[in-house]
Amino acid sequence: MTNMTTAAPLLSVRNLTVRFPTDRGDVITPVDDVSIDVHPGETLGLVGESGCGKSTLGRAILRLVNADAGDVIFDGQRLSDLKGSALRNVRRGLQIIFQDPRGSLDPKMTVGEIVDEPLRVHKVGAKPERRQTVIDMLTAVGLDAGYTERNPSTLSGGQQQRIGIARALVTRPKLIVCDEPVSALDLSVQAQVINLLQDLQRDLGVSYLFIAHNLAVVRHLSDRVAVMYLGQIVEEGPAHEVFARPLHPYTQGLLASVLRTDAAARDRLRQAQEFVKGDIPSLHDVPSGCRYRTRCPHAEPSCADARPALEAADGEHSADHRVACHRWRAIESMPVTFRAK
Image 1: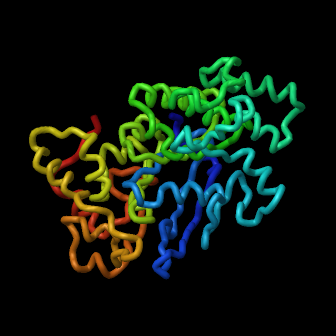
Image 2 (image 1 turned 120 degrees about the horizontal axis):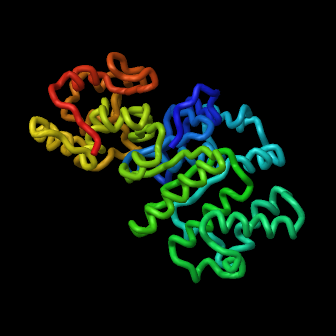
Image 3 (image 1 turned 90 degrees about the vertical axis):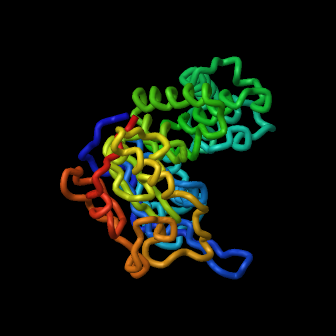
């Protein structure tokens, strides 16, 4: 992890909205008016339950799916203004690591061809130079030159994910969208890949948008955390502060499983674990006002009237800790606090 920086964001997402037509004849909005920033050299963890829109947001940032509204500004360039070779040039600095290492690697290609492909597409160096770059990158992720001739289907999941990381890093990008990059791996392999990502960030200065539902991993890796619920950001702030003093009841419920409390807080912990019971509402029938109100024990009738703004928290919180909840001040005043493990 890096220290927070006052530099301009490397990635600035503003009011991004993604809509999809469905077979039912209606339209769903998995990403609804989302704004986030990622600064140079930092990791922003994006968390939330499955189906909340995290992966769709990541793909929309990369323009793997089209956004219906909003802007994505990467390294000073508005991606919606770019097409063809101009967009391809920007993508050299903006890469992705996919969740499923096996499914993201072409079984008809060797490992060397897979890692070399981004260099070839972007016309980086002659063939002998590219081969050496591929070997150097495989070495950086803990694999040797002998892997260049191997088929990815013969490798373990951890080795396959290292290849995916090498492919993402081979063009020396400034930002990588990590879409659940360790969720398909065994725990011991997860730790290896997480440590590898940290080492590469330290050595190369790359920024990560780290999408995950594993909160322990996010806490370990992230400088800042954004919590997403049903297509919207409900809380955002420095990772240490969000984990120590979550303000949104949804965040409190998510963190209850990875937090400990003193004896006086045990009842509150059990209550927090109740916050996220039940399934996330369907995108076909999104609740009015606060989208979390149908699962929140603190909800009042007025919570259905208007969407809560993502506002800066005051008091003892840092200036960049923000929360979208009509009643967060009242909830925070309850005489229990959560503390990270």
